[in-house]
Image (cartoon, rainbow, N blue to C red; front, side):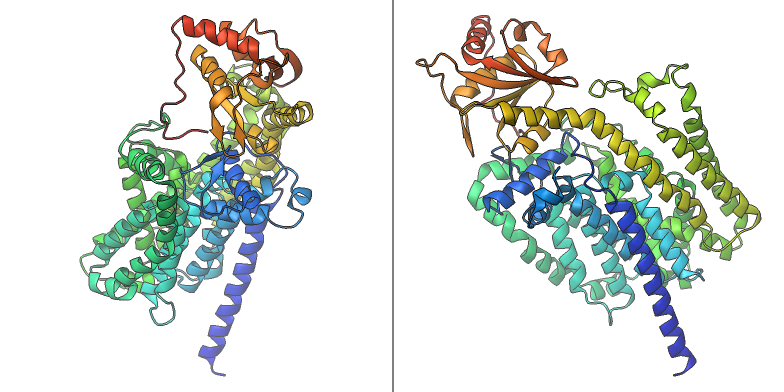
Length: 619
């Protein structure tokens, strides 16, 4: 065996050890205590209920929640959830149902970490001499993003889109670099999974990125020949289109109007669900999503732009050295696309976080090798200052109440949250983690080490375990536990043919935990009229409204109502029976005849029901 073979074997072993470390870190960060808390309203219980409904009903085509189709997202996330809900004994080892619901998001983030680490370690780029350390740094830069830390444990489709789209992008670049070893097919299969996760937006984002990257590489023909976009898109269509066509044939116009019209076209061209933000919103998210390493991200972007601006095709523009430029194109296209969108949400930035992680990971090595140490030190110092500011803010938590800051973190749905948070010691632990990270960063300025960013990242990984997870538990205890208690009382108190209503604050977790159709309405007088009408004639899968039986003396319904709504004039004087109260929620048993009389009074006063009007999104 010659020296070159020994070197290849050594590099392979180092890469394997690095991937094992990344896998361990990913499992700890994403799966530790994954099912220890309940689902957080408002959106995650809708996804979870639809996934579980597939498992229960055997209908794996149409996602349904609360007895109606849920057309806002394609089915891949629901399929993954449903498969876990179908596993033997799931309700025994996952009593809250949250592990099964969060599993796709957690798994997605671990897979992105592994693909990032493997890609960086295989192609360490021109200036990098410690690929294993840089691969681990890239994986942690992704997983420690504030957005990723949160959405890895939320049962929605954003983390899965980040994974399927991110893996597809990395596979495209790998194919471009080494066409003999990596097939062009896999990237397009991953893109099909992205389309089955959140729709055609994945194709648009990939197309924009590849066109921009081809322009920067000044070699469109090579990229076209290696990636083979025409047959690739056919593969993507063959995998993803059948569900869309079958659903369109089955559900018809409502599916077309809701999914394509409302959740795709209208979300991009206008503001839906009051998610209106200024045009510079994603510039702010760009900064927040990579804290406290945003200065290093900007440094990496600057280096990528410098390479792009070179008139002579340098070694850094060779395919195997183009990962930094590819990541910059990837991130820039997502920034531009969602800045142009009418509806803006922080989670839309998640598909850009793998690209940001690559730029952060390579920022140190590029500046070190190109004699720009002072620029790197400036960015490093700014990162340390950001860490120190966060630590100082956390240490000052003992004085928040004196300066009136607790009012800004209180939530009407979580009474006493600020006091519980301060007394729990969570903020002091957070301050300790950030202080340790800052101290290590300062030491490394005077005693630099390759891969020094790991020293800053390690305390932040501990922060996730000793701060964020206990914080999730505290929020669950104060905000979600009362809803689970309400659900248990509803199931224990419900009589045959007794419907369940929730008025005022809408909490889909009530449907998820009771496994029954819940009629949700707001707190206005019109909502009361709507409920009375719906109780008699509305029909949903698994539930049907029934008119009041005049031969029976007691026709009742169970009502979950919050304290604020119960004090409104049209909800007072209904003579309810109070069955229990948990947090801000009361459980009433209400005589439907009394409710009907109140509705008639309101109708005579000019209030008319409007629940039959078409809604693009309803529950």
